[in-house]
Amino acid sequence: MSFLHPGYFLALLGLLPLLAVYFLKIRPTQKIVTAYFLWEAVFEKKKNTALFNRLRDLLSLLLMILALLMVVLAMTEPEMAAGQRQDLLLIIDNSASMNALDHGKVTRLDTAKQKARDIVKSLNGNQQAAMATVSMDIQFNSHLTASPKSLMDAIESIEPSDCPLNAKALGTLTSAVTAMNAYRLILLSDGCGLSNDVGRPTELIKIGAAPQDNIGFVACDMRMLHTQPPHFGLYYRLASSLEHTIETEILLTYGPDNALIKVIPVTVTPGLNAPEVHTIEAGGPGPWKVLLDREDGLPNDNTAFLVLQPKRPVTMGVDSEYPFFLVNSVLAFSKTSGELQYVQDKPEVVLSSGTASQAACSVMFNVPPGDNWCGKVGEEIDHVMAEIRIEDHSILRQCDIDTMPFVGARHIDLPPNSLVIVETADQVPLIYRVRDKKRSAIVINMDMVQSEFYYSAWFPVLVYNSARYLMGQQDTRISACRVGETVTIPTAAFAQETTRITLNNEPDGFDIVGSSYGPIQKTGFHHLNNSTGQWSFGANLFDLKETLLDNEHVDDTRQAINRGWPLSILMGSLAIALLLTEAILYHLRKVG
Image (cartoon, rainbow, N blue to C red):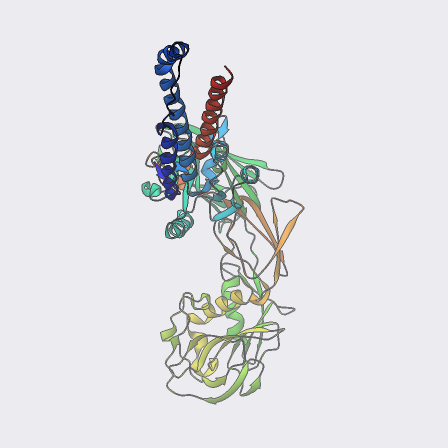
């Protein structure tokens, strides 16, 4: 037992005057009487009741001592265990695995919320609590408060999440709480995705100890195959928490009407299964669903959402005195992957040589001397040694910069907002991006004809990378991603424009500004719309730990929590009861 205010024990010195009242007696005055026989009966009666009176007085003394002791203990505010009075930070895990059904009836999240309600109901008046949730990150639902209603409302507001549990987010909070040493951190979770030392210093109230049977997708993708007529490749991988092999089916649907395209029989073994690939001959670009035809413990991973991306080539035009090689660099990808397309009217990107292009987006070689919007071009330099300034930039993919002949490179004074990707040791830019209010360009500082760079294998690759970078398509448009990931948004000229986001064809959406979207929080189809057009992809759980529902390695580490009224209130009430008892006894003695 511990005492919050031990200094009040000095009040026990009040026992001294209390004892003095009961044990110090006033000596009676002696008087001489002439008729002793009149007092003899009185003395005889007093002698017979002396023992009873002493016992009665001793009982009163004990009652008053106990009452004083209870009052003093109430003032010191005793507690049964040290540390139990610390304010509580209750964290409810609302990650995907908490949507699992225990015994096919109640989700683990509902069980965790009920346990949190029980804790709030049991808190005494000396403790405060805050409420938070954790999945991909920590979200606070209630600040530190002693109001049971506020905490109950915070618990009711907790919604299930589609995201896996991010143990790093929990670890960051744990470190901060440990440093303050003022709170007890209590986590209500099934433990999926946590390490076994979660209870140090976090106290874990384990939810859903019984293993659950579940099968789900941990990977899935779809690509268009280079066949005539076009076929599609479906890739998927399953995981199972069952201890035995089962036979089931996968349903493949296509389009907004979910037309059934194919039924695929599958054999699912325990644990992580080998990946499977199937060729699909029907359907086309657009939304696809891959459904596991089986009810199990966790519905979240039974459906994979995919969007087969249509080919969207970047249209390119040419502005040069020597158009032959420039046109062929575009046609090299037009005839193979189809991701570039040569056009003469209204191209999205203009490939130029020997001119400072005025197009909205352009890839420029051999910019002529003078003051242009893409920089002030000066004299030619000799002995160029290229150095990469930005490693792993998308423009440099599949390119060997060391073998590129930057013949004819010139000194350039860059305008503001330029991004240098490759430069010389003297910081002369060789490849850079430049942008003004209406135009954006990738400039390659070399004389393409003098260097005969158009004979190099890197020439069409550099053109391809630059064109797709300018259109915000340097990354292949995905068909599916995991929740928690961030995806690149195609934007015009790679600018900071607004993109409208809608989920699962819902009427309401929201706007974001920039070239990335995420972390993704919801499973299903995500639709993006900006000046480059419309683009969709599917978001899925795809998490092995969440699918296997494995929490056997995690132990419940909860400690005792003070429940009911504080001991000080109980002791104060007992002191009042003792004083009332003594008052009644005193009244009976005097009145009879």
